[in-house]
Length: 420
Image (cartoon, rainbow, N blue to C red; front, side, top):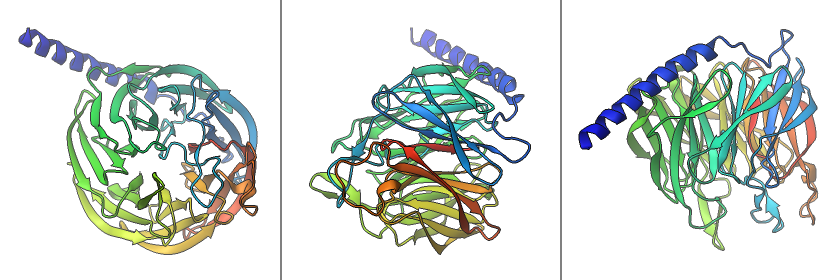
């Protein structure tokens, strides 16, 4: 029976490998469905509402301005709102998933993939110009999915195990799928990997060559690197300690440079919250073999809750959104070595900037802010139902940011943004 089991397993790996190749060949011919020839595009925001998760669509003009055009159901449920940290009122609040990459796009822009943390599944929406349509929804293979990674047509989901509002977390795992040309997800057999318990895992992403998966674990202060095999399975895992406590968001720039934010947290009245002005960013260079060489160790932003991060297209700048300070921190990156340039205000300490993304052409950065509509009236009760907004910035040649647009009406529970 053991021999039969081994043979069966190998056959399944071969089938998965062949399917992956066919799926990639079918999908690679697809063009970008959101970018216009005039430089226009789209921005998408996941509302994460417990009553029914949706994706809000904004048309992006060539000058970076946004116009809301649609809101489409994912077919699943969001987690709803989290809990506000002090000194905000004890109402449900921002950062309910405590994660980066809850909403992602395929490289060609043909599909959006989204987590439904409240129903433990993931959805795929097809993009046709400014129209998006739900085409698939499958189980995430775990509890409380918070982040997604994609390389070509290989998809992995990170299941945190339990809402981060809970003191004791559940079991964290990852699971793999293949995305076909119709937008259907096919589970990869034996792809589930358990990472641990109460890890606070917040981000999953592929290395640029797709040979490694990287996972950040906030509560264990670890960065995991998992080697990928030819069948799409995450095999060997190596974990390394974060340079500073609480690694959160991660992003790759050119030359395989990886930036990881470190927010540092303390527990107050049984809940974790960011340490004031203690956030840092470390950078590494990843080899083809998957080893991480330290380039910059815990460069301070001097801000609170610098969680989300993105590189500029040319790789010379790194941006973090500083939730607790109401700023975007700008770092210069000289071949991966980081230095702080300075902050850009998003509206004050109560604007709570969360997720961020940059357009494929590198011209614009967009920030999802959960509380920006009540930035100057803290604390008010009850809070508005949609106090958030999207703020857009033009990326200048020196990496500095110039405000170009602001649109409101974003639900309090929102997390996850894609700019195309």
